[in-house]
Amino acid sequence: SQQGEEDPQALSIQEGENATMNCSYKTSINNLQWYRQNSGRGLVHLILIRSNEREKHSGRLRVTLDTSKKSSSLLITASRAADTASYFCATDSGGSGGSNYKLTFGKGTLLTVNP
Amino acid sequence: KAGVTQTPRYLIKTRGQQVTLSCSPISGHRSVSWYQQTPGQGLQFLFEYFSETQRNKGNFPGRFSGRQFSNSRSEMNVSTLELGDSALYLCASSFSGSYGGNEQFFGPGTRLTVL
Image (cartoon, rainbow over all chains, first blue to last red; front, side, top):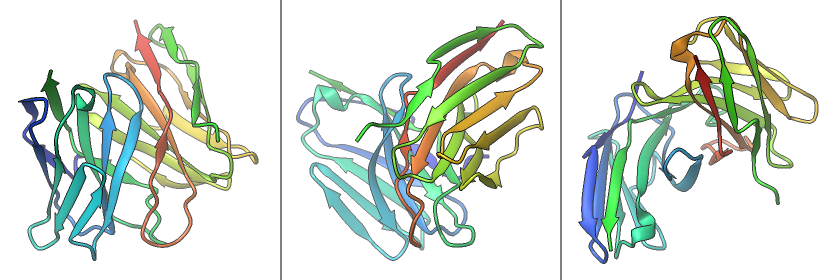
């Protein structure tokens, strides 16, 4: 079953524009992570935000987390054609020790950045 | 540092056969997780191994099994293949250390087609 639900399912923008993707989840979490997947390949970890954090930056990426609304957003600024990929949020709902040995993924947002 | 490797990359089998997929984690990583990705169900957690022990299991039938060796390499096996088992099987490794979760590093996946 999916824990996270990304919105929108697909997003098409022009190079240089910003892209915002949202993720909602259902249960309490230890952390939330965002991954990128280029067509049919493995996933690449982008950023992890812990449940006690509200915002995190990494290069052109900005992630926010609102645990009261059980939602997160990923902002990619100044997008490039190379950012074209599917983006997934994944939640770690714990287990003993807190290590994320069971990530639950959403169905992803397909981002297309047109040159 | 070499990334996560998976073999084989592509596999074609027929219904009723069995298949074994292999995953070599990043050196020093002790946790290996397996995921199934299909267009309909998205990314679903199969199981996770740590120090040769299965720590967590997803909601898959008993035909799906796995194991981990002392060098942290992992294999997953699917017996009595069904058409619905056609999917991209992804392996991910993580250090699985302190509380708060760790990012998972994914391999390129094995594309299994069941005819």
